[in-house]
Length: 184
Image 1: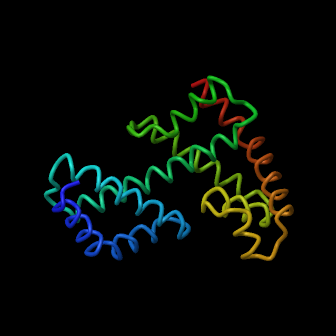
Image 2: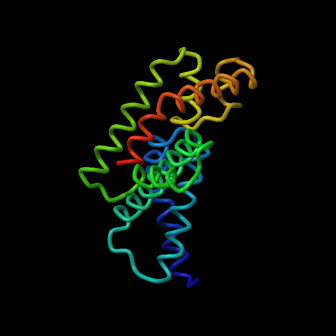
């Protein structure tokens, strides 16, 4: 890498590092994820700077960071759907997941996505608070069982058990919605 590219990257990291990290940290649930995303942004910068000049560095960095954050959230939502429909993994299930995760939004996909999330939150509200909290912390806020255990003082195995009951309830509760969507 030419010396002027190296100095450009170093200067960019010095100029935007703290503010970019603050931006990322506000949008993810833990420090490790924020650091990973920031590292991905710097890596992408180092790859792109060799191929083409960046006209508006600040806008480019924040756009890349936002895309990386969205990718992380999307990957997390996909794993949530996989967990909910794990027993029924087949061609129809992957069709549902692809409908809900499609990036191009049509009125139909927006309606189905909103319906799914509305029903999910209604089903979560039916759970005992302990099960709901563990599910939300683990699946929606991306906290590990170890982090939750440390934060709450509840044993690891108890948390796993509570989440298991929550997932079983959600599978039962959302089965009809799944059937309606896939037959639609």
